Length: 168
Image (cartoon, rainbow, N blue to C red; front, top):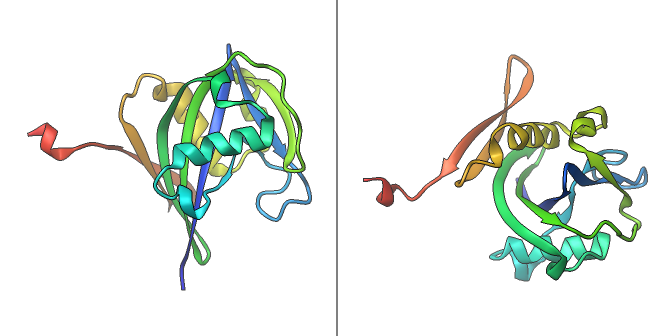
């Protein structure tokens, strides 16, 4: 039976740097992988992934909501992994706060955007960051990315979430 795993992730920026976490080698999910900050939605957050995202940012960095500007939902990523369907809400925002507190989740670093892809990233993270840096800043719609395979390689198909009634 398929299970659902629902997550929220944030990529906080300060000038040309992204706050990235090198996940602990002891983590069951994605050990030693670099990612944004985030985690699973609590049951009461299922209808408010932004609330979950802000909670996760605080839990993993001690950066508060008042220190974050322009936090926008940019992507919803759907992916199957074995017996799970993973739904990930991906937010991008800015912060002027450069100080953070490390947690047991991993170590945090400010990484220049030109150095992001020199880190060990998950396929989904890499494809999302590449898309954001090339197009995402200018796109006003939320995009759904469905991860699939093409020629035995992962591929993301990006589609804007739009109200079709507004288009006719």
